[in-house]
Length: 72
Ligand code: 9UX
Image (cartoon, rainbow, N blue to C red; front, side):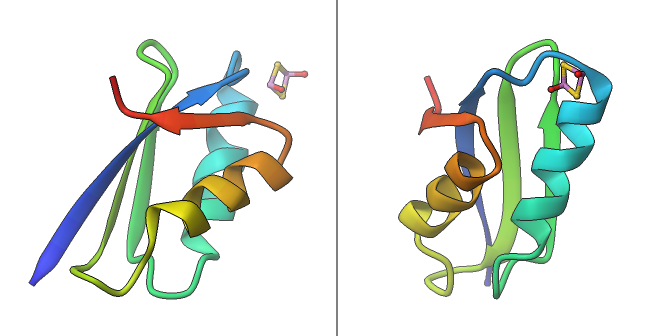
């Protein structure tokens, strides 16, 4: 089944940041969709259950220059 992983993303402060974070997450193998919320600093990632590790998502966020964390 599909699953959703939520992350917090620090440093995402403008609409371009949102687009960049969504783009790098959609490029992670197995990810079907990613939706970032500028107001809350959270990202919701859709993927098949078990196929994507949170650590892989966090790495992609970090390599794009943002600061990932667990969803509060
Ligand atoms: Mo605008 Mo977002 O310079 O990093 S793209 S704040």
